Amino acid sequence: MKVIDIIASILIVLAGLSWGLIGLADTNIVEALFGAGTTATKVTYILFFLAAVWHAVQWRQMHKRWGVK
Image (cartoon, rainbow, N blue to C red; front, side, top):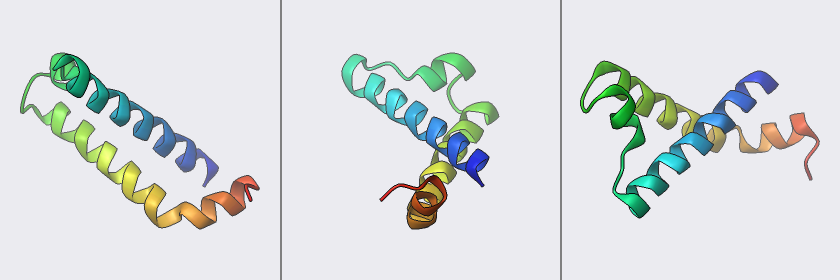
């Protein structure tokens, strides 16, 4: 499960950076990389969403797995 935790954390960081660029520079890096409305863009956004859901649902278990108090 720690591997999934790490992947989810990385995706959440990437999502945050993506939204930060949209807010600060009006630049959507995901759409710049894959194109607006493409399957790759949609999959990327779905992965960002699933990572956030994973963190929300697994919050306590993740802290136990990682030994965080």
